[in-house]
Image 1 (spheres, helix red, strand yellow):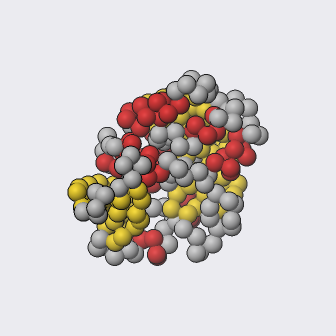
Image 2 (cartoon, one colour):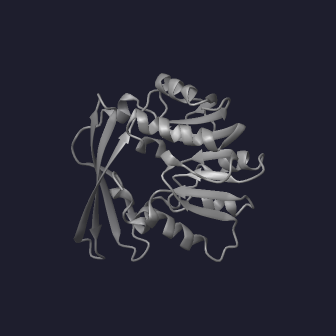
Image 3 (cartoon, rainbow, N blue to C red):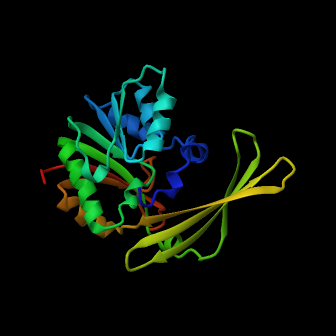
Length: 256
C-alpha cells in the first residue's frame, strides 16, 4: 500500500501509540446515544475500537492495512467483544450495513492526499451513514507553527521499548509543499542498548495532506455532511487560531 511505511511494523506502531486514549470518552458519549453498529474507519490496531467494544458496543473496524488488522484481531481475541474486523479501502467502502455513528481518529483524514481521495472517502462515509447520522473525525490544524517546521532533524520524543526497556529516541524531518498542501515527514528512530550505545536506526516516510477550515466547510458540504461542531481537541475545547487540531462533528443531511 502506498504511503504506508509508518504502518509496516504494527507492533512498533502500537508501542508508540497504543496507550493514547484521549478520544475515547468523547466517542463513548456519542456511541452511548446510538443503537446499532458503530463504524471505526482506518481503525489500525484497534486503539479506539476495542475500548468502545469493551463498553458493550457493537463495532465494525475497517482498515486497508492487513498487518494492522491482524494485530487488532490478536489483541481482541478471547475478550468476547462484538467486533467485526474488515479489510477494505475506506475510499471504496462496501459494507452490508449502515450506521448512526461513524468515526475516524488518529488524524487518518490526512492520508487522503488528493481532492479525489478526500471526496471518495467522504462519499463512502455518506453512503454508510443513516440519514441524520453522525460522522466524527480529527485532523491537524494547518497553522504556521505546524507547517513551517525547519527541514532538519528535530528531536520529538523518547520512550522505552516495552519488550526490553531499552531507550528509543525519535526524531523527525518535515518539508511542506504549499502547492499540494502535503507535508513530507521522515521519522527517525534511534535504538540503544542497556549501556546507552546506539545499536540500530530506522527511518520511515509518510505524506500528510492538510486542509484549511474554509476548505473543509466546502468539502463536507459537497459530500452531504453538515458541520454540527468543531473543536480544538477531544475535550470539546473551542476551536481558535491557536489550536493544533480540528475535531469535526458532522451530520448527514442528504444523500450524495
